[in-house]
Image (cartoon, rainbow, N blue to C red; front, side, top):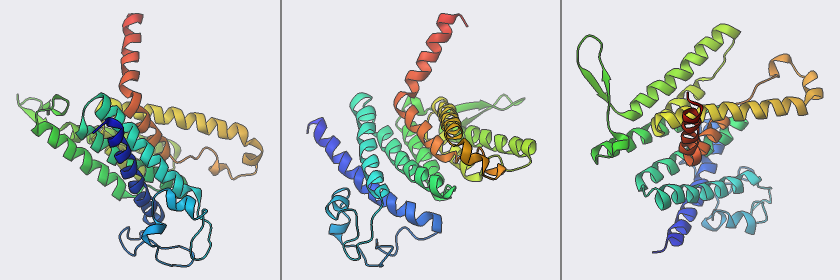
Length: 291
């Protein structure tokens, strides 16, 4: 089959996953089951039929409203389905079409889907459900175990020297990434709380950082955090400049607050596509500069 055919299949699959993500985004913040009850209109409670749930098409065909009560449907539902489909195709092109790694594509596509849910939930509710971070951690470990089992050099075991014993402790790279990234964010949270006398980083951010370190190679995971900080700084500064008058009327504690989860999601997506290029460019700069 030609590449475009499989890309189309991946897009359709992505939109279906996106439809499920909408359920997660709606129910997880309220601690509701994502399995039961079946999808229904939040306004009239009518159970939705198959024709009401066709990704992208049903939203447009129904004119952005419930078939049964006429309640308007937010654009977020359409955006999540479209974004998941497009991102899945882009990852398929990058990791299957160019790099020829189906396992990496599957791992990154599934993790990216979870990150889309994180993005919208944290943006609206300022929480990151533990289930999404745990999903990423399990996914990263399974990908690493598979890679090590088939002899993939990118997933070879780290060998960590044990001081004064002469022994080395073999450890999966995903576990090292989990410890380093989760530990880094935990340290930032502790030091920030000690310095500012208030919570500097939520537990959800720490767990998500651990998941990122588990799924991504460690250099890319750390780079994604730098990208997240940069994006957050740009958005935060821009928001303050554009909203000076309103900010003067707000409580002082409101100033400077921005959920970090969406920034981390953006950082991960960026490095999944150009992270290695960014690292190579930086290393080249160091060589040219003689550093």
